[in-house]
Image (cartoon, rainbow, N blue to C red; front, side, top):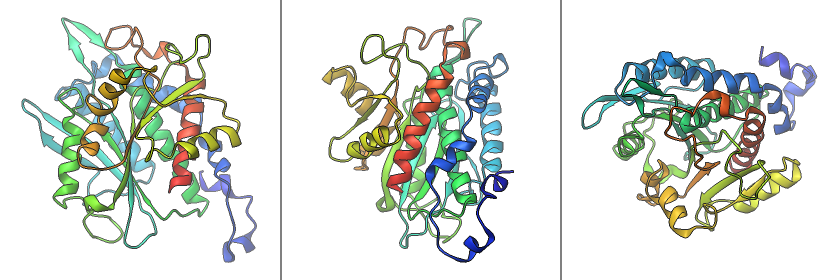
Length: 322
């Protein structure tokens, strides 16, 4: 089906060099898919996805199936990578779109899928935190798969990571770094371990679902990108937003607060692990709302049209980086 979307290319084009526009990837970006991911991960069946719970296990199995459907290559022969936290068994789901550069370079794009679980008999759905980030992760992968099916290649590999254990002191991100540091993740094409020196950027998607906490009063069309000014490729983000007329208000700090920016960028989100090891890192977020970490963080509170815009922006930004 995905191949048919590129069927307009003449047969002769297969034998010559041609350029495929990244705009083509928008043909597979649908709000229905974004909604379906958010609704499933936030469903009562998964019980809030607490790390180590049966709901988190079901979420990991479901994500593994999605990674296979999206033709992400397994790393070291597997998509699911289990590990122990201080008091439970957790699972990261990892996959790769290989690049063509030799020696290889990689950008890590990650989103945590665990949440608070069920407390006092009440389910905390975690739709914005962070089913929204996982939905964005899957749709970005779907768009890159479409570009691959259209025979577009990228020099840099895209390592896609759905992480467990964020609510246990960033255990999933810590485990992912441990595997990289110890050479335990092998590129499926080269067969060589991915090394820390080959990671050129880490991108974290954490809460991208609503317009309830705007940067400017009355304007829900916004997104924040927290990064070091010198390493976040901010000019590329601005160029994409302007040139493709996406129309989002861009923020580079957490509502003007140095303390809150440091909190979310350097301390409590998964990119912290990569920052601590000297990897340039970026966090995309739409901010904390009054629903976060409450039973009211449901799929009905998310703005799927707005999420689509944010996914467009992040995809095009990544596409230029790769």
